[in-house]
Length: 291
Image 1 (tube, rainbow, N blue to C red):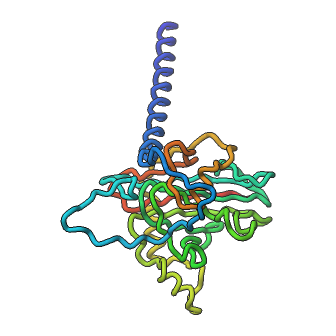
Image 2 (tube, rainbow, N blue to C red):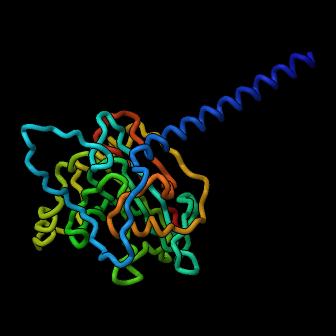
Image 3 (cartoon, rainbow, N blue to C red):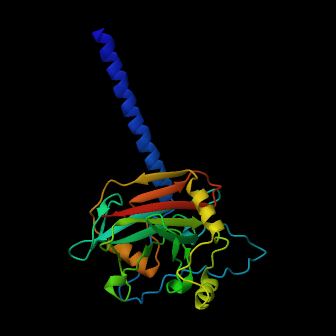
């Protein structure tokens, strides 16, 4: 009996080790698949170079040359055929020294805490961010008619932050929690093509310029229903367990100058990847609890 019990415990131990190894392999597969399209090296501009504004409108593509059909590559801003689309997310909080440090999104936030979100995609596409408070009506906080010329085009591995760390005033550089407790839920929608029924670029500028329309925009019922439906689509997730490290200089430069991150740069804290390469949209949420 004793020998059988030892054998039984040994089998359980081996099963646990095997499960942990499989889980680790799955997580490494998600993170590896997301980071594989990062270039090995990115040319960083000199500090004396003028800082260009990141482009948030899709560039006008030149007419194709009938004699040649170049294949897009990740280095040229293209996308691999059959590639699963992914979103990398890092939450930063403002420490007592004013520095942005990596923070666990599952922590409980208090009055006076300030946060900023850094996003990175593994393909070119369009980014939309919606916000609800305590399950209330959704509001589109990005694109915004007052930011980036109302554009929301994101290039592969070129980081994007909200709010911007280079905003004119310090109070505009962070989301700040007030004394009102609640749950803030951010919906990140990354699509290969623009969302139907949601104005961007000049259409959004004209929409918000019209006094009859209310901005920030509230998505229509049909659009929101589609987002909720896609929210239930399978998504593979890998979450880092390392927090507290300050944002790197390379991340700051890449974000403010519209430069792609390289394989040597810090990885996102949270990586989300669609389960299928045929999925045209990735919908992810981040819930911030404030007490």
